[in-house]
Image 1 (cartoon, helix red, strand yellow):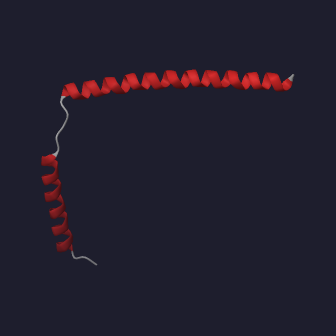
Image 2: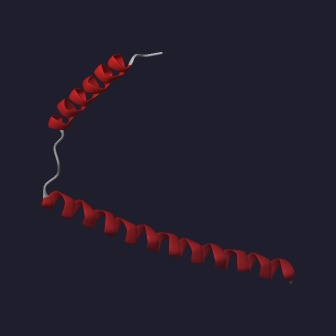
Length: 71
């Protein structure tokens, strides 16, 4: 079992390393955030339209198959 002193030293080491790593972090500018958000929104609409169209085609295909088989 670790002593309290050893646990405290490990915790202080962890905090020091965390602070050191946080100094290396770069945050995106406001323009970068806005442009990537626009790309995500546009891509979401494109995929939504594609899935909607694919769903309609699949439903029509199933209905056609059931119509042919039920005759």
